[in-house]
Length: 319
Ligand SMILES: NC(=O)c1ccc[n+]([C@@H]2O[C@H](COP(=O)([O-])OP(=O)(O)OC[C@H]3O[C@@H](n4cnc5c(N)ncnc54)[C@H](O)[C@@H]3O)[C@@H](O)[C@H]2O)c1
Picture (cartoon, rainbow, N blue to C red):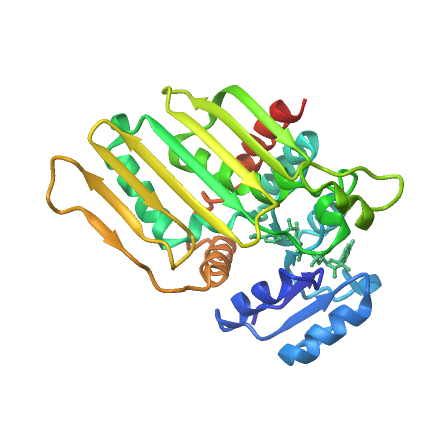
């Protein structure tokens, strides 16, 4: 029976716990630098917690989820890879290109599954949209990706030093989708990145600065598809959608079940406009992760190589 360790017991951890439970795994151990967070969450789900110092002492845990803030990922990933553990790490896997290249090399050498938590690719609407784009490959000329969220009242989410801000929190998801739909970005044409809500300076540490909470980037892929991504942490509610278009066709989809999946051709009658049901995408993401570990599935989604590509684009935008 598989044993799972979940590191970091904040907002994301319950989604991972549910994902493992819904895949029939109950042997789950929680860890957090603030032990009471691990204990409280363990009580809530009737699972176990351990002290963070005992992270690797429980030698029979071979699989981990990392649900901690971005600037802590590298330290944890290095420890886990050194100890031959498989891991699913919340996005962004790492903010450092050299580290990602090293992880790719080590994971291959040790036969480990190291996966980034890019959940959008597990959305049935986005999967159908990818099929629509592939079926109309040369006809899609434009794509607009939108994501917005109010954020949480947690200092690190807006902090430059701790790897917060709209780029690492939200924009990465859309870059990941854009790469998945259209292949890697080739040219970056225009960037507008700003801090809108400057009052958040009150919730970050004194020697820190606010990371951008709004960004629009206009780019092109290798085949000249014009891709615009707009992301912000200034909206009062969550919103996410993608619009693609080209001569005679258009498509719209979202991770949100209250927004429709639309795929239409001006010259065809059987166009689609449908609403999906709510699904826990973490369950499908974790099933995929476990199947990759068991080699039932070849690991091709949210690989380290994809994180390298995402990191290169972000480096170009932020340099
Ligand atoms: N996939 C998504 O849609 C999505 C959504 C939100 C957040 N995230 C990502 O999930 C990760 C966590 O975000 P969150 O919102 O759950 O954060 P959070 O602040 O709610 O929780 C983080 C937890 O990690 C703990 N922690 C910090 N450093 C640690 C360490 N070194 N070892 C063990 N525990 C540590 C904190 O005490 C805290 O309990 C981030 O990488 C974030 O970008 C992903």
